[in-house]
Image (cartoon, rainbow, N blue to C red; front, side):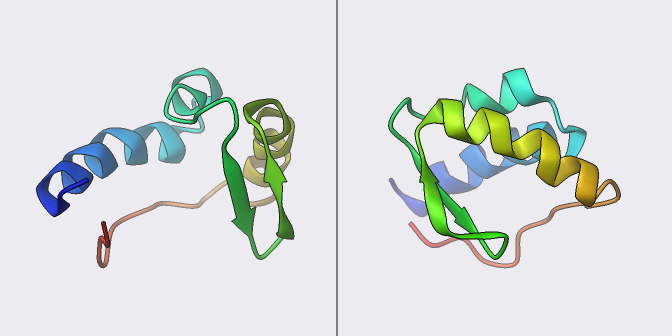
Length: 73
């Protein structure tokens, strides 16, 4: 993915994340995706695991707002 394409993707993905729109957000992830963050360092595999995890994450951090500092293709 080229950097310009990545920026366009992020501009579409970020509002879904910030709005905590699980249905829209999950549309950006492949069925066999891998997701990790400081709360789940070993990571999660699969869209279903992510669908179970994200509502809990969003409940813990209800005021999160996201922006981009740097995009790396």
